[in-house]
Length: 121
Image (tube, rainbow, N blue to C red):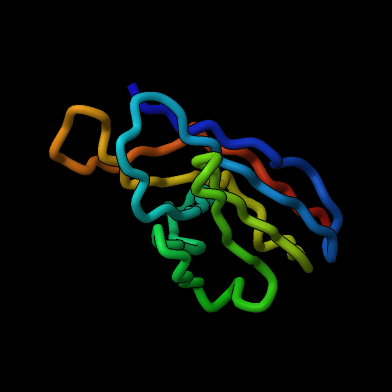
């Protein structure tokens, strides 16, 4: 059983910062690419940033220069440092990870439960 548990969301004023964390736990053989997605009310879930197991990163244009994705492979944990937050960043943020479970030859995609980020103007 593999689980992703997010934390760190909350309410912040525009211009403020938040740091999201996502801890992967369970029977994990290999943790591959990970990423953050977000879903605003009434909208589809969109990619925010991704990071490979080797540390290569990719960002959607709207967060470049403000958000930083990182990971601690020893702790199986993913982070998203969000600075200069804007009201349009308000959404539920989801962690995604591609994981090869112990005893399996397949890599599966997993999602966390989501954490709410609200940015007030």
